[in-house]
Image (cartoon, rainbow, N blue to C red; front, side, top):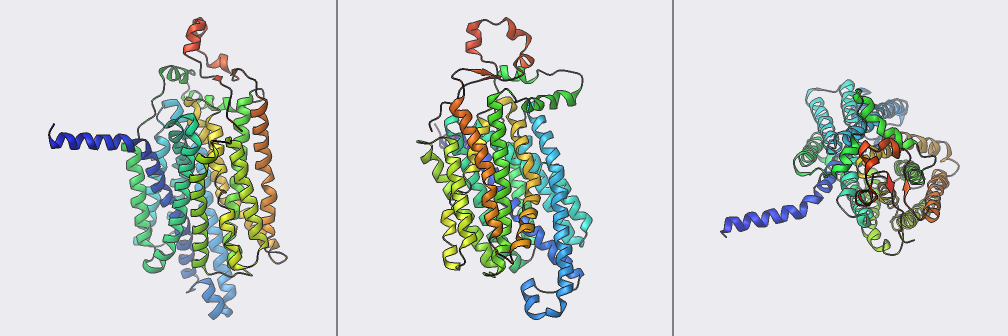
Length: 499
């Protein structure tokens, strides 16, 4: 064998090893661009609106040197807040619909990569529009167009649904939670790096370079999603069942299977799936709302931290939580089930949040970072529970349904928690965090329901509702032996995980 042949064989062997993790590479680059865009576009909108109001300097500088212009600053700040909220709505609302469409289409066609490359393309166009505006001049209509395009592409919720699907299908069921924990680690690390990087980059070089870097990251995620991610091979019998609706109406054939998820009154497995989805969404509301309010909390009394110190604190907190999410699940899963590990994440969130609410010493406040080390654990654990409750051919639609609510959560949760903070901080600045701990009872009770179903489920196979509707004509004539070798997709096996 020549040296060239050996090099080629070695290269192919390396590619075969890293191929299953191409989704995670695209995941990290996509979310690094995504987490950079959040502070970037907010600061860019703020700077442009301040220029329109003839205001120079940061809010802290204005408080120190331009006290007489406080009314002018408040008007500019109010306009900035409304503009940012409007841009988030322009992205979030279309994303709710588009992610459901992409999920249904991916299941109908069997091409799940659309859940990856479509959001990456939207992120690329979003960056390109902002770059074009910086070269040509400020226009609010262009910003709304950028947000709407990213929303119509599915935004980050579609990418989350797609990456969850590929992550689940890449490993055995026993390793699903660990694989999803790896993705959550990459998400947290991307958040920490992006927020730390944007603050210093904008300060030293302005907005243009960071937006070009976002464009490059989005292009990398797009290329990996299109050319390097391999579609999951679906069993031929599943493909036949996936075409079980063959009317002349394409829309009905595409979206009718999704309606089956709502027929869960007598299906314990689907009830468990919905409890996990609701627990995921309620915990996301608490987590996202609290994270955004923490910026206001640390910038106000009694701390009054500068933005750089706040950014550093949030980066370290999220990085520690990401590391904890990556390291802990493989260890705990040897002795505990996914629901038990989820409870550990809830406890970590509650204790760390109360510590932030009660403690007023800056040095002691940093101990909350260690208390919150498991706060991201519920996200991969609840995704793992959902993935085990449905079969392969319907998981694209189900994960899209699971994540579509996040599009609304990302702008409603901060708005809700910041309103609570504004009304209560004069009496007790930590009230909003106490309320967020009380809100944690909602996901806790939902996971208790999941645990109850796991402990009391029948020790036999249970057909999902609608089995007769999904069965093909050939299924009615098969023998018992053939049914044992080739199970219908509507048959669900009992979960035998350890507690």
